[in-house]
Image (cartoon, rainbow, N blue to C red):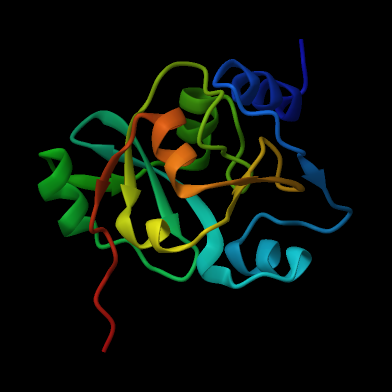
Length: 157
């Protein structure tokens, strides 16, 4: 069986992306850890979150600077939203929390993309491990995931 990072590399290649996956000695599991390791703004980190909408698994790709407004997600996805626990995330995606990538899952996932990600020229997403990331443009992120772009950011203040 191949490593999670290798599964992501193959999935990216299948979508025509030949990108360099960067692996770190320190954790990149949180948006802030990834931003610090890369020396980039936290808003350019793609946070991969797995939710249950009613009983469907849904992947949300959000800006590392934002909290996801679950009521907005519920309206977009058409159901009651709750976070999936770590065991369910691993079972449904094939990856551990902190390393869930946008692609390469055990099966296709219904995906929603926070529109705030589209304002950046370059993004960084998890590459299958809490120690690995890869660069991706917003346009490629939308293309390779087939995700629906929606406003998911929780209002601040």
